[in-house]
Amino acid sequence: MQFPPAAAQALQVLAVLLLAPFVSGAIAHVEARLQGRRGPRILQPYYDLAKLFRKETLAPEGASWVFLAAPIVAFTSYLIVPLLIPVLTDFPLPLGYMGDIMGGGLILALGGFAVALAAADTGDPYAQLGSSRAMTFGALIEPSVLFVVFTVALITTTDLPYAMAAVDRSSLAQAIRPAHLFAAVAFFLVVLSDTGRIPVETHASTLELGMIEEARAFEHSGPALALLKWGSAIKQLVLYVILADVFSAPWGLAGSRQVGSVLLAVPILLAKALGVGMVFAVIDNSFSKLRLYKITEFMASAFALSAVAVLVLYLGGG
Amino acid sequence: MQSSLLAAVPAPPTSFDGATEALAVVVLLVVFAMLREALLRSQVRLYAVQSLAVSALAGVLAASQHAGELYVLAGLSLVLKVVVVPTVVLRLLTEAEVDLAGSHRFGVATMVLVGVAVSVFGFLAISAVHINPSGAAGLPVPALGAATATVLVSFLLVMFRADVVSQAVGFFSMENGVSVASLVIAARLPLILEIGFLFDLLVAVVAFGVLMRAHHRRASSLSTETLDQLRG
Image (tube, rainbow over all chains, first blue to last red; front, side, top):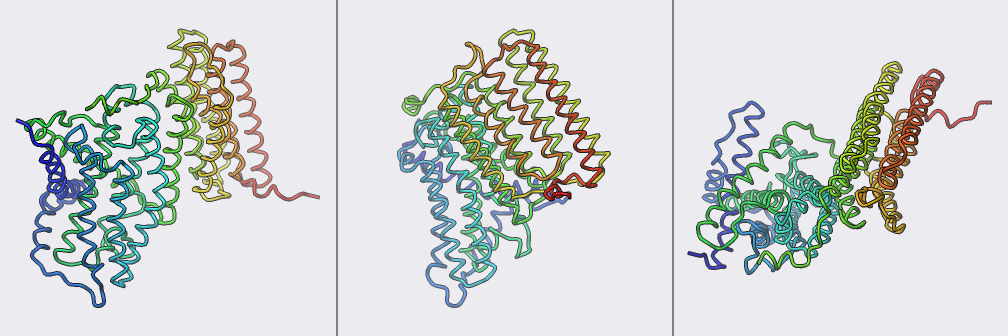
């Protein structure tokens, strides 16, 4: 029995939607263990979301519709990306050709932009501080993302994430070619900074001045806050999936729309995302944070790596 | 559906080419790490790592070409560059007992960006030369690009850092870049010439050692910032 293409596609989105809080919870749990605490239970994010959805939404005085629309826009943008990347199947489903890696990056950025607009709309200094930092650092890491995309384009002659995954799988020589390795490491650094791990952000901090991502949602409450939290968990999972299924380990995906193989891909996806998350948690807890103004050093290293990947390809081979 | 995705994909390099290119690029990336590293001791350790990559490159080439002299070269450079030179420099540093960290003339990000620009120049220059690597089993051309970029970025390290140790390490890593380049262009260079290069390095170590001591004795610092004034 086969899934119709639309159902398989919907299942990709649904898997990301439902597994994202679990991945966040598991990482928080492991992190607590690494720090010698017992930590929250793994399912805690689901309880938090359920609690927030039962509360009422409050808006600061003078906030416009932008403030109320932003969580929905952000949530929707983050959910569009799983249509474009290999989540469960290793071949593009009908809407998979809708956008390439650049398109996916653009949609992720749109979500961040909506949240930043809402933060500016509230007039809360902390929210604006957080969103302005998030936008600045996003702009700083963008050159590395671009060069990673160039590498993908030079290797696969297209920008489709599915094609990159297929090329990685096609032979060992493709998987270990230097350009691919360096681009993968550069993208790893990008994800590390984009999910608020390293180099400067303490994502579980309660100190407003050190916050980046967390501070942006300060004025939101109730279902809107739930959507934002859920959205950032989804964004994290989407980035993990791109890292694992496009750049480092695109194995274990369903090769057809057979019900069995598609459903089997779900636990494999979860295992891969948890694996990536554990690596990130260990890195996050074994390195000290940089000073805020040292962030350019980190960005420059990621950029040097991705630029070298393109250079090696340029000279042929690579 | 898989095949349509792979239709126009160019062939990857062979795993020998890939591995050697990756090693050559690691040599380049270590110079970038040196640019970033503030602690002098860590810089010397990074030089040891870089030399390890160069020796591994020589070893891989020796294994693929079944060349006994390349094995000798790999062993010699392993002993000299990974063990002897770093140990000597570290001992000199222990005797100096001043400055833990060298001074940066520019921000790290600026240095790395200039380094990237210079590497781009190195790679482009090599692509314009149309060089043929030595023989069928020689190293691939991108490794030569990485070697050129290594020499150029090491030169940047010498220029940008204002302390004797960084400048010495920059000079040594320039020599590593030249070694990689010689492995690409003339892997079967007579052993006696290669050994001659290695002894050049030893002479440089002695010279830099004398320089470090003399400078430290006069300025009681390893920084070269004080050298910009004439003494009457």
